[in-house]
Length: 252
Image (tube, rainbow, N blue to C red; front, side, top):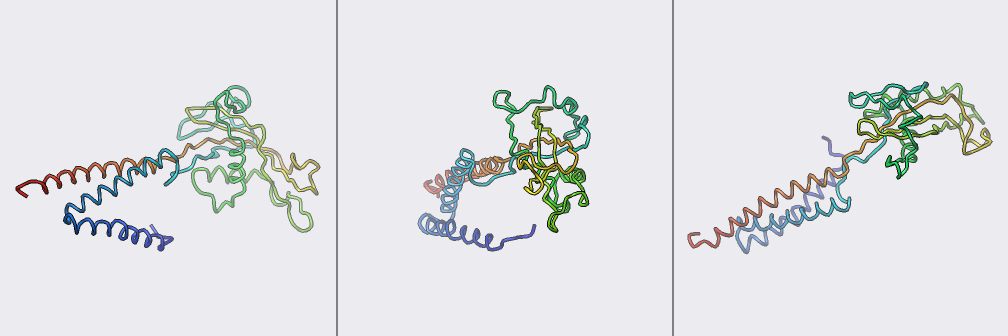
């Protein structure tokens, strides 16, 4: 894996040498090199273990993949069939009827209309060559449903900006996953075209888009740090106990 910022790696190495290395040298000069290692390392991993607990409780520190809405299907006609991780989804065909509903705290759908709209805009406006991940093919298909260049009005020598506006957004759960389904209206909010800036001027036919919420793994790095540092702490505490008994033993 290429190192994009070698100065950061150098800073980490110098920090380890300065803080842990110098502490170890000072302790070792007083209690011996072997006993000093166990003592200094036990203190280091105790500190890191407490930091891991702090990271788990507060959400600070190392972070994993953020939760995000991922497009899984787009279509000019109503989406009746879709799959998620190889499992067919049964609910898209019933949109917008039950079990689809506007997400509220009462029905516990945890609706995030703003986040969904932002995800759709990122999907449909990101250049095709920069799309990555499992949603890349869906986003490319969705971009193909937007008005072509020759159908976009040109004002004062420049084409107007096309905004994918998500409306009629409904939410449901299927196979344990939170889904969002809505209609995308390609509009322009240019005041020279649109009489109503909120609704905008529709530039092409609407189409459907289905998204699933990826819960991410935000707490995975601190949880892994908790397990690793906890194990290392237990190992070094056992070693410290053994070294102390050896040091205090009359035979030693």
